[in-house]
Amino acid sequence: MSKTFYNPILAGLVLSAGVVRGADLPARLLGANSCASSSCHGGGGAEQNQFHVWSLKDVHSQRPFATLTTARSLQIAAALGISDPATEARCTTCHAPLQTVPTEARGEHFQVSEGVTCESCHGPAETWLRAHTRQDWTRADRTAAGMRDLQDVYVRANTCVACHQVVGTALLQAGHPELMFELDGQSVAEPKHWRTEKNGPGAQAWLVGQAVALREMSWEVAREPQPDAEQLARQQALWWLLQKVAATGAWPTPLPAGNEPTVGAVQKWADDFARAAANGWPEENSRAMLKALANSSTDFKNIPAAAAARRAERLVLALDRLALPVKNSAADLALNHLFQLAQSRPDFDAGQFAAALAEFSRTLDGR
Image (tube, rainbow, N blue to C red; front, top):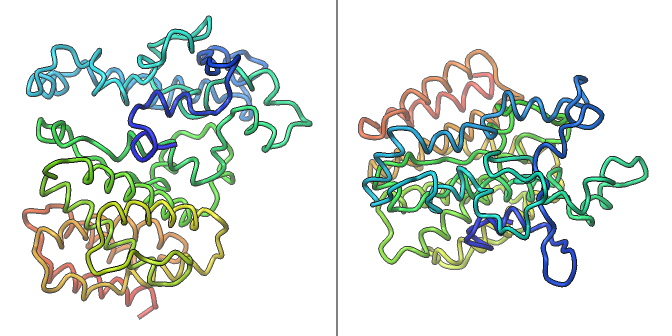
């Protein structure tokens, strides 16, 4: 589950498998080495090299914690009055999440230094490690034992979004970079330690990821006594994007009532929409979304330049993922032009972008 919409502490995410040992003790995390034997995930074959891919190629292994030791992190920490970002919960929650795991939930070989590790995503392994590779165990059996079902795109999106989208206003103002969660593109870029067919349709992963991102952004806006203007602009841009998608009618999730619904209403709608989009995927949905977004050039007229620029930065990423199955050379060139126009918010020209978007739409139709 998401650390924000459901639980404000990432430890809740790490320990949320729902299986306990005894009356009150959560399942323990056993550490990445418990997965690393050559007969399991530390072997050399394509079906057994998951530990090596994570430890040698995946930035989740070492980079998140190492980032906290850089000059930039120290500068951000100083602005916030933090003496050591490597031990500060506001930083380690995402960069070194195992630091927040209570002692009673740590197994014998548990190591805080592992970074974002196997169990950060798959759940505490104590209750399922020995049996999860059994041939007679189904996906439902593994999930019931406490292994997180990452083949479920809604579960997968919730596992990733907390640390890949939400950054508090204070951190942003201190210099932390903005984050933009995009489940499909980020999954494609990730070094693979799973079979790619388990990802499901790319367009579905994109949409579910965007919906849970809107939910988290809405939660963040709702909890701030005085939301930052940029924070509001980001949330509104994604809300605009998903309204365009919802208008295709592919998912029976009615929009909140009123022209300007509360962020709480948007938050709930976004979660309902994510669940609906994760439940099956007719291929025509992908084309309907692409057409609706490619034909949105009029939505860049008569709105503030800053709002239009925020819409554009979300839109170009959406078009990049959704157009993959149908792009031609002309569409590639037109999309590259859109990326260039959206690259700098201070220099954004809504008129130029709208014209380029209309051209992109024509290329998809072969015109």
